[in-house]
Length: 194
Image (cartoon, rainbow, N blue to C red):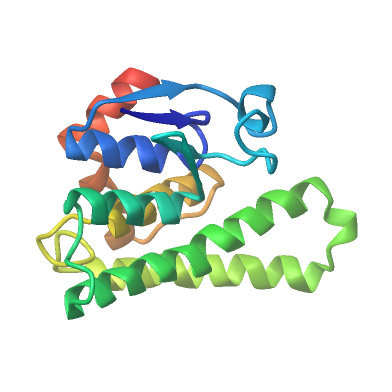
């Protein structure tokens, strides 16, 4: 059985959601980043952590890809054109939404250390990326058409984070975000943990 370590209101939510979607049993330890529980398995103190047969896996993107490949669910076969497109969506959300949100969160605490130009640049990147997700999903159900994948979990979580930070999502991006979180597994996960 898998063990997931990390608090729900972090990137850990992505791993919990994937496991719920797959219907796979797991144990969950609600632990904040840098806590003793997290540091006992990962010296970096970062979450999420997935314990697999005594092995420790870190980073939500890597964990989602591992689960997708191991269980052959929530994604396309490795080596296929579809998988390359799925991975491109995942990389886009990581680079243009997750990373700028993380930088923004860190700079909000230290605004005097970050040049105003960089703060404006981060805001602009986030705005453009959220708009792009709306364009990609306009007329589609998910990023890969009708197929829900780990890229959708990752991207929808990022959009929720952006929304929570006060970013106004386009009508299309907001509609996509709501479609993803309306899935039964997402609803179940939120009822359990939110």
